[in-house]
Amino acid sequence: MTTSPNETLFRPFRLGSMELKNRIVMAPMTRSFAPKGVPGRHNADYYARRAAGNVGLILSEGTVIDRPISRNDPGIPFFHGEEALAGWKLVIDAVHAAGGRMGPQIWHTGSTIGKPDWDPGHPVESPSGILAPGKPRGEAMSEEAIADAVSAFARAAADAKRLGFDMVELHGAHGYLIDQFFWSGTNERTDRYGGATLKERSRFAAEVVAAVRAAVGPDLPVSLRVSQWKQQDYAVRLAETPDAMAEWLVPLVEAGANLLHCSQRRFWEPEFPEIDGENGLNFAGWAKKLTGAATISVGSVSLSNDFFNAFAGRNAASTGLEQLTARMERDEFDLIAVGRALISDPNWVEKVRTGKLGNLAGFEPSALAELV
Image (tube, rainbow, N blue to C red; front, side, top):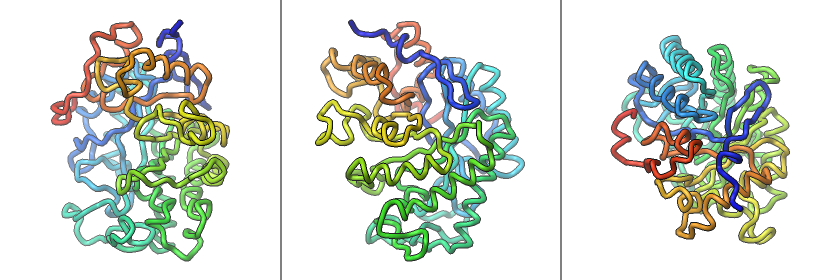
């Protein structure tokens, strides 16, 4: 018999000082509705509606650290400066008033920036001044710039705790700055932040995580979002084997990340099918097995009202929601993140909780034009 999603997705979860009412996470999604980098009441209301709709944990859109040219769009919010932080205080107070839990995703976009007309006079920065193999952009960061970036991540995390956020997440995926240090295609450094191995190239990330952990103390959850794929190349894999994945992720958990947000394009796909078959552990499952950290899985989760099929990404109704609940029942991963469906429908989670699957609203591109 298929387990009800109410039984599986709506189990409470606790990590450190954070208690969640269910296992559903709102994935971080850039919305670009923060004029001059400052969130306001419209942003607070947007997130509060998801909290009122019973999202277990809300992760904010990417919000950037105090470094020049750290964002690739002028509407992306800052997580520094008195005015922007006051805006984030509005957000977290509104989310808490609606019964929600939330963490900011702290970010630096690295060399993904094209032509930053909104911030002239500063160079684009990255590990080696490369966007992708064979594609130079900007300049390589000095060790002084790297140290300042590490400090900026820590300051943002400390501010998040001071403002009352329930956790923090570092964006270390999808070909942005932290991930550019991981990837040999964008990290050609010959100093201590480079190297032939993924473990060596993870030094910057480990320093960021350790600084953030020191800034927030032992109890506030620290999440690190990671991915094999890059926006520059969907086929890239940082770790081809479990041993390589352990060498990559275990030191980051040891540095202080106790939640790994494991992004893959389709959450139901096995990470190493040659080892455990076509129904084997996904990325989040292997990350949890190898590190012992809690994990969030994400990737193409339910974009329509065809709930059973959309979770599986195919048409066989018998393998849809059953597959998700089976994976969560055996604690393959701890939390599941939902992205675009929550842009169009702030009550998506509550409809699932109450069994109103026929009323689910799928993603509508028109919703991108406003904060619904």
